[in-house]
Length: 207
Image (spheres, rainbow, N blue to C red):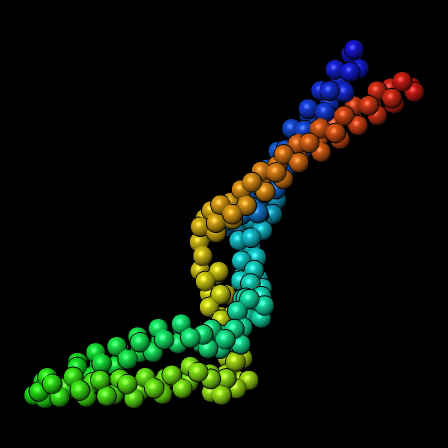
């Protein structure tokens, strides 16, 4: 009976150690946000993600610009009829407003309306030509520039993210998965503790 209680106790001790270890490991992914120097020892401690934030930003920028949103994807989106119609409508509306704002007030309103409508329609037709076949206007060089711009935007967004906000996002998306990791640490620790208890009793029996 004594040996059984000892083995169970070792199991619970192992479970506690395993659970605490995984909890700390998860917390240390983010904290401390800023680098902290341990007095005397001279160790520098910082969360893994804050420490590698720039590297993570570069990697994400590369993934997004090459795998998720490429220059060709942008062209395909511009070729969609619903997007073309919305863009042309917004463009023509903008041109009309600018004509009204920039033309002299001495011009009669009826003429101004006709002029604005004419300019908006003509320019809208040119925009529509471009949207119907954007591939004719973009060469490999322009597509690479789009890719670089997407990469730059992603990198800047990730680097500029406050670490507390990024931590909240990660926990919001993966809270249950992180909790499972903590629980698995406790379960594995429990069985390791049991094994240690059994080995300890067996070893004492041999002595």
